[in-house]
Length: 197
Image 1: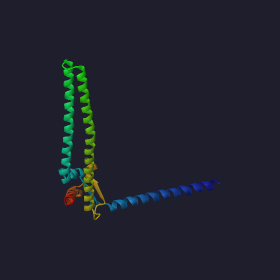
Image 2 (image 1 turned 180 degrees about the horizontal axis):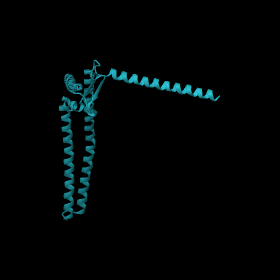
Image 3 (image 1 turned 60 degrees about the horizontal axis):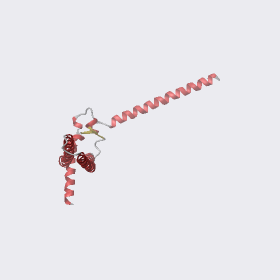
Image 4 (image 1 turned 135 degrees about the vertical axis):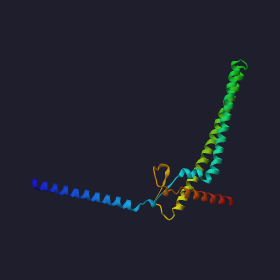
């Protein structure tokens, strides 16, 4: 009985080793196959940040939106500073005894209402500008995606990588200039189409 049990264990151990070797062989074959099917000519890299910054849409609509946002921020900051300055002057006048308590309180309430109205106005305008920025970013991303798809219509590249996370790559893999040119071409076509409408 012991001999049968030991023989069975030996057969199972042998079968297990064969299965492990088969699994290793399959894994090695798959790895070799993957390496063999992807070569450097199948890979391209794109500096997306450069494309975004140098694109015509960023230089026109992007700059206009940033200027609009800066003006809005400046407008609210200036109005807030004016209210703060008036509050400070009111406090100084009250401390010097140049204004009655009742008048000081009435003026303070008026300034607080103006501050609350200013904050409410900012809460309406700022999200609208943020939404405009989001829409512009989505448009730029869509242009980049369509540009890459057009460039890679022949499926020449199996992998297109953003250089943001790239540590090193041969410059011959870089298609940033092609993507930028295509983004600008697509944007010009969009502008021409919307001008017809």
